[in-house]
Length: 297
Length: 278
Image 1: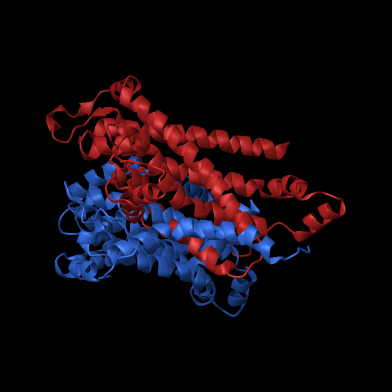
Image 2: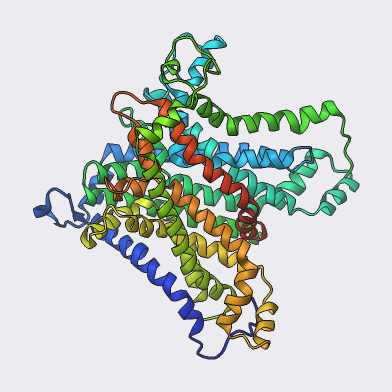
């Protein structure tokens, strides 16, 4: 913001204005966070208060040799990668289409945003109803077109449960990619395309040499924001399958939640949460560092 | 750039794919709505039909007569409204400060609000549960308002700072020349100018609080029951009343979608400002 004339020497006003926000943040975010780190080094099962106490790295050791932790970790990766890839592809396609002029564009854009504001509980319930193994719309349609003979219990068998939830999440999140990328597309000056056209660039050359490079910062930022969000999202899984059937839709947040909520094992649940956060931090810093590096080149 | 607008090309161009994407986006809603006006018994018939022979409003009536859906709506409304008011009350001054003043620690403080945005909910939920049990505010509106502030305050600070940054600083200067104090300039000049952005942020907070499920599942039980919890509770152990659930889903999603249509332009401007420039 450069030289700001609103500042006096030893001015307390700017601090006074941020204090309430800061105080609340410390009380309800930072203190709990440190509490969770403390719990992660403790034996803390709610209904066994007499056994509560510091146990060092025991929970962490337990996590590393816990097969359920390993499979939840694997599911988390599958979850993040497949959702981000498909949300990006669908969102980008949508943005490119919406960037063209056509009658009804405003309405189309508004309608496409609808999934994004849909409450997670409603998203989960709507899809659960459509996936229903006895009366669900998807089964009915597949049967009507003769694609299946017997109804598929999408959410009740291990081979299809994860994929089915992933589709629901792609539905909920692709509009975010679409609007962010659309804003990016609209910020690209027309002159660039005109110059490329004069130089004899074909349509696909214009796309790969103008659109993609100009859009890169937006693409990278949006992927980062979505990755964090998708990695942490668990309510849709909880409502659609509760982690099941078996443990086939357990991701790390789901595992942590079920440990705390059903098992009342606050210590181990906190350990999983801390490990998830560390993992996310590693991904984010690695990613940001790569972005900065590629911008220097 | 000149493009030929041949009708057939337009159909293959934007129209057909856009139509498919729009159908994908709102299809689940259409089906949910159709289910909600279908008599419960027809939903489970072997013979499949798209549209009910005798559309009915009985699911909606049952929602309000047999179940206590009105009080669920009130709980959600109270929590969402006060979360928005608290969030704005705290973040308007903070964002103004971040936007207008250069002070020691400004950048790390602002950065901090971005970083805590990415903390998993599981990092906070257990200690908040323990804390609220100790303080004795479990199962109250207040508990949810506090819990929701963990994600609304960082987000709102970020949004509002971007809205304030878009207002020329000359406006503050002019107000001060006219004899306003700095707080006076904020209250009388800047807040009115930023009002569309502030209202949009407030509505967005309202929407996220209205939609929230996880904290409500852990921090409330019997006295307070927001809509997402009420809907989740309708899923019985053995049998799910889809007629009721779809009706409840439509009623709770509708206000959010309508509100969102009013703010989408502002919201998108605020959210994309950083990313597009960066």
